[in-house]
Length: 599
Ligand code: GTP
Ligand code: SPV
Ligand code: MN
Image: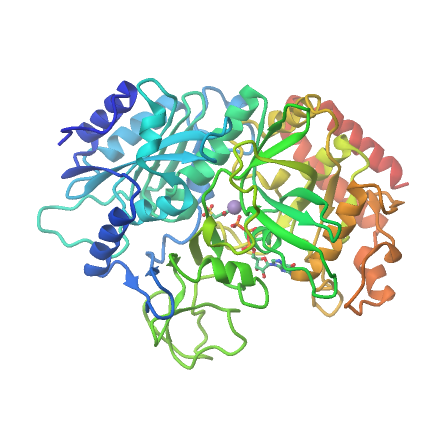
């Protein structure tokens, strides 16, 4: 079974052998990341009805998957940070003691791969030759995960070659948790929702995920490694792992400014990362480095440097259209995987918002006939496309630069119907950390929970921080001291609604107007006025070419209600109380000066 493994890394071999003994798969397959390997797996999946090959004339090299309706999003209630102490995991993570979790997993996972092939996927997060890149090896019994990982991470023979005999890697174990009895036919999307566990062992840099095949639960390089484990590595090694997109802004003069932005799940990172400026803003251009995760560290001159550790996009499908995000549409036009979207009669995909008029007939995400007005959604709200970075027409020229790109500004944003203005600049880094730490957002379909509920989501990292959230906030202050000059920080909100329940701000491409103000602030070209919330643009500070946005609407969009802001500080206090003695003093001071500004 283990004849001729393609590595001599002894830790890797020991771990793979141990996994074989425990999980008892029928076969072991070491993945080489080749196109042929992926094609063979996809052909097999199509053959047994677990995937649908889309019409090659419409969407070449692309496949549709339908998940079990109980396995459609990240499961935060089943996600654990198994640290040695409750203090290390902090008040916002689910904690189970490492030894107890391991005992539970050993019981749960004994023989869990019976009747299946165990795949070993060596992968790299980050550009080739980058000092910031990290190697992982995922063991999985899901061929869907194998073909997805090949898009989302770098998978190839070079990973094991570079790892060598002693190189560091993060071991990631994954099983769908559905062993097959001899002769038993497999379901199209095997999973085990009752027993799902996604466990992180931060001290050991080790991940085990059982029972789910979907997204961040199963593609372990993404949230598990590149955010939860990486945040811990960042704490220990002096860098930051963030739930951030990275984009480049090119001014008509050719000046290039990189911006990183943290928004919670399904709050517009992909759209913003691939923004198409309005035609009226001649010469402004946006390029994409990443749409979900940023790893940031101080560069040689004390500048802030960032890489996107991912090689693909795992983007929310609904709402994506030629009008809202033509670049994402192009990125998933070929060589892409689709999960839980609808199938058209001519073998293409469709989802809510892709076109104004829905097709007259579809097969919905659960495989049922669908017609407009039938009262059901055709695509699941958290349906996604998996597309390679290289497909993106607006990919930044430095997206794969091993040194990363220099980041000149950081944005934090949430989905807030009321109270929060379109944009504000923090007075300084400390105030910026406060704005990020107290970020609130209305819950989306990207995770279980009631959609629309407002929750505090510090730095958009609430579900992704692998250690004590308060220590993570403290790490931001420590980190900034290693920069020559901390970058300016901004707070944005595209989602404010008027009394009529409609969005006040057109959003999407028009967010370029906000981005331009940000870039102009970075380079000291435009003013701002002081308010209790932060530095605000004046109406005249914005580039309004091509948009008729009356000053009255602007005033509504930017308005601050002192009473409501005062009330909000109570919610901040509620969060801070949870952090107890771990809360950085800087944040207590920031809250005090905010309260002072409100009287
Ligand atoms: P994850 O991949 O889950 O981390 O999320 P993401 O932040 O990349 O999500 P995505 O960009 O796919 O967010 C999509 C949601 O944001 C959709 O509901 C869009 O309609 C909405 N959205 C994006 N940009 C805007 C905007 O400028 N204005 C408004 N009103 N909605 C927006
Ligand atoms: C998110 O929920 O923030 C995502 C999707 O980016 S998943 O990879 O499923 O976590
Ligand atoms: Mn995300």
